[in-house]
Image 1 (cartoon, rainbow, N blue to C red):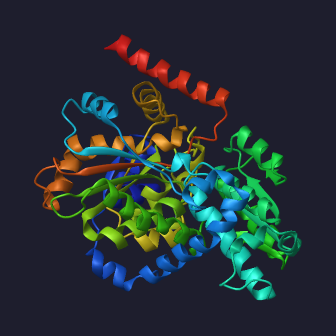
Image 2: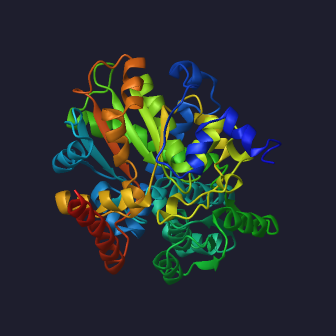
Length: 454
């Protein structure tokens, strides 16, 4: 029995579960997509919340510039560039057998300073908010002060009295660990079996305590939560339920609007925006999606991308059961090389927050991600980690699949000619050279095998 139903009953009520169990690449369209303005009006998260988070990050800019010189180019603001991909557009056209009509852009959160992934948004934001709360409450800091002061020994001594715990498959742990340790917090990252060795090594080199588990992400989170509950001076970063994390991610949309304005990118009914977000537990992509809908409204069409072996968010959204079911319930093993996406149970908070805002979700194999990885290196000289490539399949699906054409027709999109496809690259630039080379060899081998078989 799964949540009170037999497997047969699940398959009959939600036929998509059969596809997920068969590990097929699946494209789901959300039949509960609501009217954007009304959904946002009813949401507990507001535009003012997003703006408050944005202002907090601006206050911390002098501190970040002081302790992380790599942020100096943008005055202590942690942000990533957008790159247009002309050669990759041709690759996707070859994959689909037809021209890609819209412009293809890459949002390079893979190259965010400090921790090199989308988690540098939410993860670092939550640690900074905690530090601000403690410093303000101590009376040693006021909102009018330069936050560069937080790098002084006085504040390090203050923060050393507190600790931070988090459960992670890798990238969230990096962002929390690096930022927490820099401020002076005693920081512990509970890492699942999926986490890469180099990520654990990097954390330890920063003075972070890493605890390893043979189980998956859920067990690591459970251990971190339990540790924090026994210590009143310990703050647990809850990737499944944290509003602070979520808000840190939403700020990306406010900044994207400015980047689009600078590039002359229009988003309206005649110029729709399609965004493809790799998804694990849901916090990062959910926060970005919410921000995009708040900023661009109904003209932003957002899709999540997940591995065929870890489709937790698609499962939760398609059934409406969110965290009440996990992929293992359906015999899906949750084993993928896309470590940041290796999550078996989705966030209920995120799922319920975006269930009427998300356009759809799809799955793809690890092999597909590796093929995109090698192609992106060959054609654009951009190196990402496997999970960050998941967004590319969305372009092909929207432009050429029957579901994609049906979605466009339903939403009155007569042509993709003026569309913008934005693939969100979630991580990669901190991957060690030897690991990057291994990723590339695997992907290139698959591409060569395809050529020989064609």
